[in-house]
Image (tube, rainbow, N blue to C red; front, side):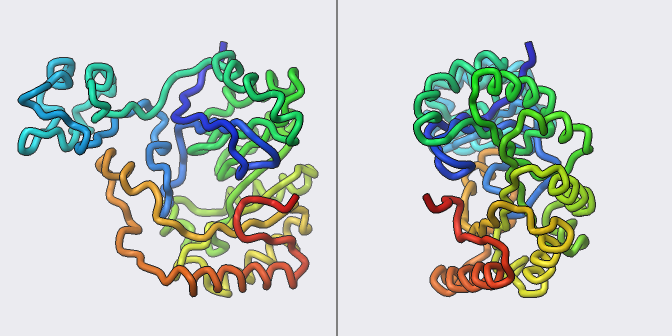
Length: 315
């Protein structure tokens, strides 16, 4: 039985696909977007995250250090656990099992397809009444494409609608094998300029754009999203180039283009993993920024591209 590494499962979601959905977040992502709100998804490995405010104190507890199989991995300051030496840590997760206060959180869990289906089946009635189903996200689920394939095959056997939300920075073979079992595709289109894409996400966008063009020719139902990041990708040069790509290279085949306004999310997760949060100093006037996002949506709609602000499509 195929296993995957899942870091979160959310039931009754309404944002990533139509109707009420069960959304599985899988670990592993080839991108490193500066604004990412799920840094726990980057590594495919199961990892510990430190939440120092929850630490009971070394003096009163120290169960984590007793359980740790390595030396000098757990770092304490004024009696509280503050970080883990990631280079020495083997990710055995014994410290997480031992911690009574959840000061160490386990990011990721191995799950079989059947274990996931047991959760998915609980809400099958809601899917049928609302037109919902199952969404796999991440991270990027294509990193675990074999697991997604088996999960989606099982969903289709049970008449459950499927949606794959991916960066599509992947070999086409990983995408192609899923198409027969995937009802809806969701993908970001962050930058048209390849150098800026590399600067802010860690990879060039050539492969992503090529895969989006191929998907449009496959007649796949596609929702595209632009995470609108202030002073990074909200300039009209990028917006116009994106519109040109959708109209000319994708034949305007997208069901909807959704604009996602930047929000400062996930900062605590970065701290728990010892990763710098690159958007820490970004400050915006929410009202004026939202006005700009609305103007961008108006531009896309005027060019004949169905565009919404946010993820919830109109009934």
